[in-house]
Length: 165
Length: 166
Image (cartoon, rainbow over all chains, first blue to last red; front, side, top):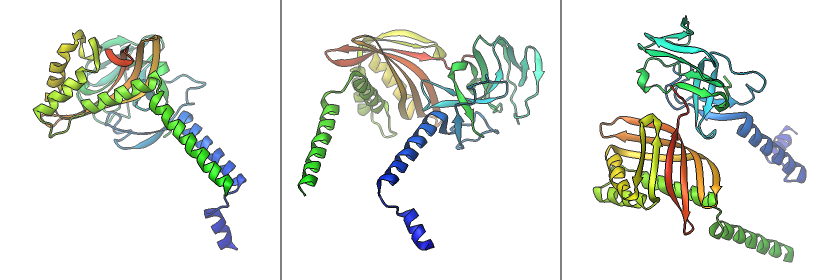
């Protein structure tokens, strides 16, 4: 009996009901992974130690449907589409002033603790104000020269979502 | 039996029609995408490339551009219009800087402001190895302008878009 059920599960009859089920599962999976949980592989060391090179994750696109992005949120930032995205942490919101002094983050002139940073080089960035409808994003890996690290302010509409874990 | 035979013939005719449609009636978006694929293939450089092969690639790339091309990349402080004749030496110079190089284009966004003008937004992923063995891995969002002359598309402008502005 159990053998028959297993055989039926592994080799089901190709009837109409089965085909409908296949189509529903296929369409649901396509919509889910194309628009809601976009799979991505991390390439690079910008977010080390929080996210490592080669890691796998999903960008959850509904994260900011009802609430705006907050400081310290890790977000995915799109280029012209979702095929290639940046993974960065939001450090400053619109209207705030951001600066780095000897590797430490200053928001509106006040030093901010960053527990997710393990090692840091002596970054010095003169204060700058985040534009309207923009956020300032930086990677967690500060153990690289500032010139080689890709960071800056970006329009909020470029944020596609947040990593699922 | 007859039914099966008819179905097979219908399927073959449909498949033939679909293939013919894609071969002979490509729309402008498909033609431009193809143009980018060809450009990427010509930009690709293998470690064993000879000077002759490099010159041939530079010449082929040159032919893909219009009479002049405006290149505007703020992150590299480049803002210049190049006549077509000056493209080859620049391509050769860039190729000489790398042992290997590869470019891929993704996420095309098409816009046709006029019938014979196209503006294409895209993401370019550039991977290369310098002569000193250093790995280069860059991603840029770009906006490329193309012009249609005699049913062929030619590049007339490339503009880099800053995604993160310091």
